Image (cartoon, rainbow, N blue to C red; front, side, top):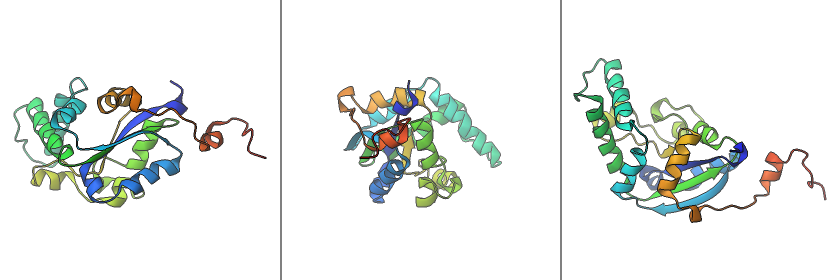
Length: 200
């Protein structure tokens, strides 16, 4: 794939919508030079959210293992017998969270789009996200507070972790006919090698 045509999935989650951050979030990606290729605003059902997370083989076990390790790091004993059981509990929280209200589903396109979006978005846990990132600037939730409340961490956005993840996630949220192919004037500045045609 030509990197300037790389596409990635972004979901503004229900907390981002309820916090009236849609415009701010979109502006951050636009300012970086990414191009919006698709957008939907709707309430996803539980089946769609489950399909999204379980589209990756071994997701339950991987997430469960990571969560158990986080318990151990805090000198706590995991309440779950196995990583898969822990992963199922995480999935249940995520399904409840993501289907609780409207989301904005988007596809962003540009050079190394997945990596750029992740950098702008910030780390998964808002509390430890860098200042200047969306999560670092606009929310203060943490894993420990989410665990105390038995809910998913409210981190405003889902962003594909890599181009390969995006390739799996995009078809879950969008049909091919939803994705726009168009020219954006700023692409001349970003990608035209010789900057031909700038002068009148």
